[in-house]
Amino acid sequence: MLGYTLKPELTMPRYFFNVNDGLNITDDDGLECASLDAALREAVRYAGSLLQESGNRLGLGDTWSLEVTEEATASTICIDLQIRPCVASAADEHRRSAA
Image (cartoon, rainbow, N blue to C red):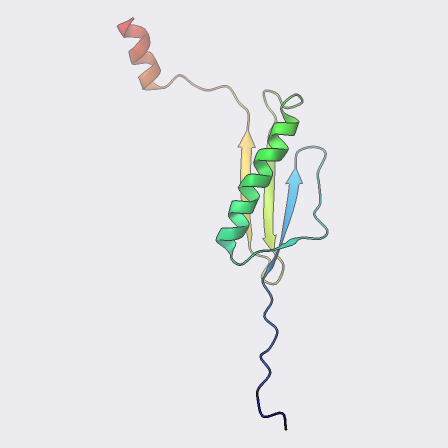
């Protein structure tokens, strides 16, 4: 008998960050994050850096998404981007009529 109890090894959940943009980047390694909230913050930073690199090849009508999947539960969150023409808002119409 050891005289003390061994604590089970605690591991953080592993999240996978997969990009769907026509080129599709599959994350085979994943990243351990303390929580879904921490994974979401990491996803926003990652999305920002990828979109900055993609700036010259994205155009009107394109879609882009980053899907974050937790390994054990397969729960998923998505960051989606769609580049589309905008319908003029009421605020825009008001500014034009005031000018």
